[in-house]
Length: 123
Image (cartoon, rainbow, N blue to C red; front, side, top):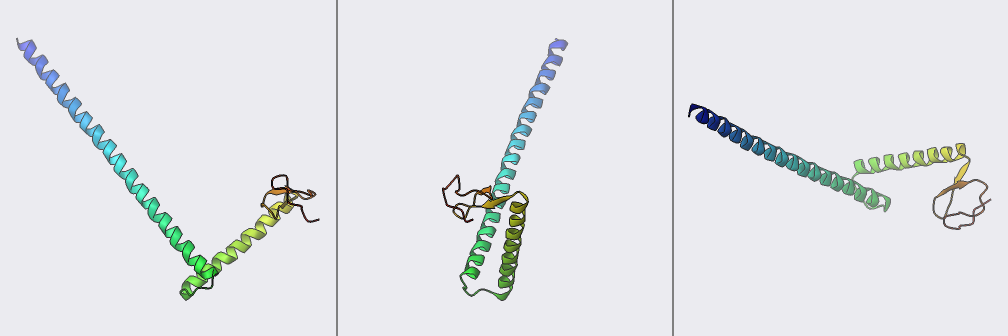
């Protein structure tokens, strides 16, 4: 009988351990889910920040009054856009390509028509 009692204690201990492990696994899954929800919410906030910034820039472009500090930031964006445009032109030159005025697709400098949109190319 002593053997049966010892076996019963072992079985009971294993059962309790399994319950504890199951609870820990469930808790870990819930924590992971909550962290994902938090990350998703932070991403939504970042999207809203971007939208706010986009709206301010559009007001600037439409000459709607906005704060002077924001106007300076918007001018910085304009400068960066111009710099990007110049860099893109240099890349096209190095690749011996041009951009289609119709669709913006890259094509060979000697192309007469765009293969994507059919726009006639300037000489």
